[in-house]
Amino acid sequence: MQPILNNFLGKWVYPTGFTGPGVDFRLRQTERCLPLWDKLVTQAIQIAEKDLKSGSDEYKAVRARAGYAAEGPFMSLKQMSTQIVSVTIDEQSKYIDLQRMRARQIWDEVKHGQLHADVLLRGGWITREEELMDDPRANTQPKLSYFGMTQMFPHIHPLARAGQHYYNESMACLGIAATLSVIDDDFVRHQLRSQEAEELMHFMEGKYQIDAYALTPEEQKPIEEVFDFLLRPWASEPSRALGGSK
Amino acid sequence: MCYVVCREININAVVVSPTPQHLLEIDDRCTYPKCTVCLMYCPAEGSIVEADTGRSLVPPPPEVWTENLSWPRQP
Image: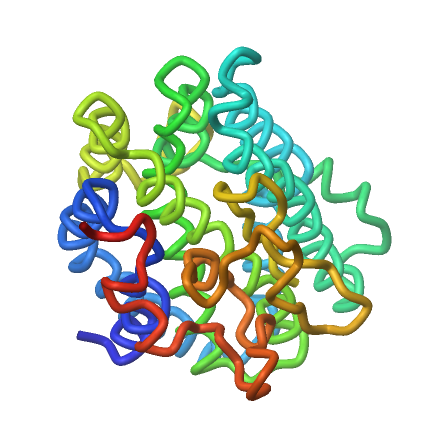
């Protein structure tokens, strides 16, 4: 197992605030995630090493445009609004702490878009953020596991988003840690260091939601089905239907 | 920096202080150290500090997340 993953597990995955069926369910799902989390760390290190060997600064712009597409205003507001409205008005009191966490994530995601824009501005690739609106590379998020699934949460269950929080936001944390272990560039490090605690909080949102609320088979089923989807090998691949080129 | 919320007392569990760190006891209803649920969900290392000792509780040291300190209590 990659040391970065092992460290993440010991610090953030296994410490548990609750006991009971929610925790047990989460730890079962964790076992399913481990091979892919490990693979993610390996790949992130390899990609970072390849970037450094490229002999060009263009990799910083590529990363920032992709980050803007994933976390810029379009994607952030779409994704965050779906997780908020997956809880109906009459359910607000039941899930109020969950909604508080989700609401503050709106702020985080929009801030992350600004961090990516900041790299492109300070690096001289653009002169105004508005230019990114004309660049498909900064506006295309073609993964079914992200955009496609996100749009379905209001139609599934208030807790379904917890599966994506747990599986994908952990990958954000692990990818950041892996990249920081390789790339010693001020632009890249500032952007990653500025968002790493927030990505960790988003993972914690998933962990908390599952531990505290996924207590019955009825509540666990929609979350497990999200894991089922996310763990399919094609789920994270770019989809042509959503604008992907592969 | 900590955004963890507390279901038990139904308010944000960690006070937003003007310092970079946050204080743990924010409400008379908070039962820390009997309850340590919020510690396991706080993301920012050093954001929760034990008042008596000054040590960071994030990430949670092993003795504050063993099963007998999880919530709700095991019978």
